[in-house]
Structure formats: structure tokens, C-alpha cells
Image 1 (cartoon, one colour):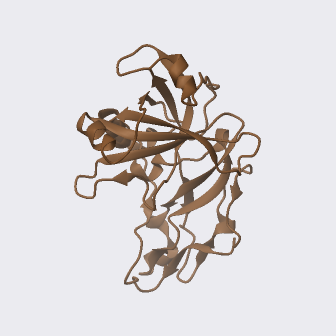
Image 2: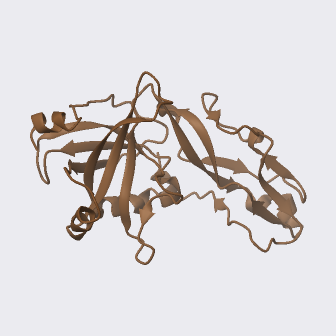
Image 3: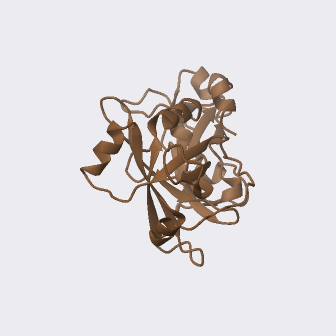
Length: 254
């Protein structure tokens, strides 16, 4: 696809700053434009080992306004699967990536590049095949330096082995698996670690108690909502906490 055609479709050579955010991944996602979309086109892309994707842009003068334009893309399934092995799925939508849009598969002709953030287009993290787990679609938004974006940041619980209430036979009841913040791109956290080691049976940890970078704004009208609670009996239905790890997988998230 020529630069002239890309510009006609709403594109334009974008070269954003290379400054890295706290959640930045060292992976660079390669993508190519697609001119058409629909129920017949997407299966053809997937059959060729590609994943349909969309990257949104917002009105820079007023980020609260709806999406101003979008670009239709496809990415390589093999590359996305490789990325998800290192940047675990719970942290995928709170990690920024470099995106390069090229004129075609294997082309050296760069149409547009910049930093993007995956966003949740559905109730789940990304649109996946229920049987195989393969990613079916991806949605990104440009995350330029100096801008702010809304991010659902996963909550990771640490100190479970030292938790006073758990040592007494209690259980950690997870009430919130993520918290939504308005974040400067430079300070997007891939995860929020919450220390529960000092919680006793009956103790709760509230949203207002969660420590984050001062530039982050919690997007909740009720900061008194609890994130977790130590209960005496194991609840019949309880979300499994995401436990903080000290492994190579965690080190893969910068």
C-alpha cells in the first residue's frame, strides 16, 4: 500500500517519541493495513496466520471525546503468541508496545509507527477462541508521550504466605481483580502489587489504601470499596488471587 493510499485512508506517517513508559514492553508488533473488514474477510486473514486488528486515535484536544478515527490492520499470529508467552495475558492490556505499520508483509516501507496500548473491546481481555484459546481480534489505541489513557490495571497480591489471617485458617476473598486508573502514558503500571501480609481475619483492604504513582487517578466514585478481605471460611465462589511472582516471566514485564 502506497503512502498516498494510506493517507487517503486516514493514515499519515506517525513517528512518536521513543521514551519508554513504566509498562513498556521491548516487543515491537509488526502490522500491515487491511482495506476491508467483515465476517468474510476476517476468517481469510486468520487462515493465513494473521490476526485482524484495529488501532484507534482520539481527539488530542479533548481525550474524553469518542474515537475520532481508526485504522484497520492485521498482525502475525505467531508473533502475538510469542509475546503472550512472555507478557502474561492478565498484564497484556496494561503493557504498552511499539507498533510498526508496514506497506505489506515483509516490506521495508514503513507507513506509520508509534507506541500503542491494547484495550478491552469486550468483557474479556481479548477476543479469543473458546476451544483453542487463539486470539481472534486485537484492539489498540495510540499511547503517545504526554497523553493520558484509561487503563484497567491488574491487582497482584503478595505476602500470602505471611498473612496473619491465612495462618489462622482464614482465606483471602478477592473482590477486585483490577482497578481502573487515568494514567499518563509514561507511568502506566503493568500491575499493582498489594501486600496482604498484615491482614488478619475480618480485615479488608480498600481502594484508597492501594499505593500507586501520584500521577494516577482512580476512576471510581467510591474509594471505600474493598479490594480484598480475609474471611474465616472459604467462600463458595471466590476469585483466585493473582499472586506476585519472582520469576523470569515477571522480569519480562518492564
